[in-house]
Length: 182
Image (cartoon, rainbow, N blue to C red; front, side, top):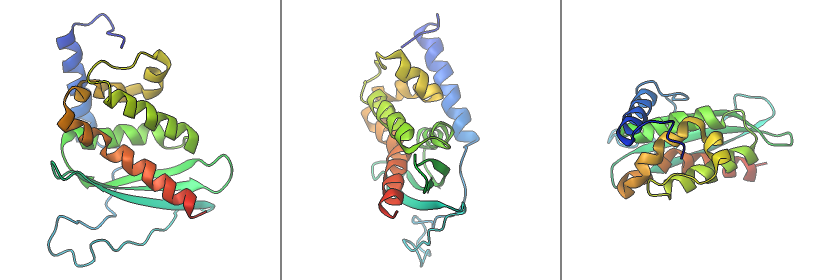
């Protein structure tokens, strides 16, 4: 990964700041999912999925990380026209700053992209998370990932990788559900 002429400590500090900022001001977060952590949520698991965009098919996926309690419900609306495009991408949930920031960055990267472009970003991010801190050898992939490259430092910690991947797995699953419903 390009180090921009910065020391390892300076880069780590910059990455932490980007993650904390994205967690403080999450993009794409809306309140629409039942709170599955709440005992009084009588209708937990029941949800109605509707598209707010005409000529779109919705898909929704709930993801839960049992090791830390992070959870997110990702909702997509995929255009019916070819090439299929993610017209709307929102999420609801709670968790650590890594999971919340990753969801926010994912929304910024994938909303408005074609399904193929979003799945390519999903694969690139997965590869980054599998790098164990080494990053990607492909500069084009790093450029495609934009702010998501800050999660390279997270990939050093196996217990935190699931936090970073939570929303991305939800996006992939919800897109698959939307396409299957067409």
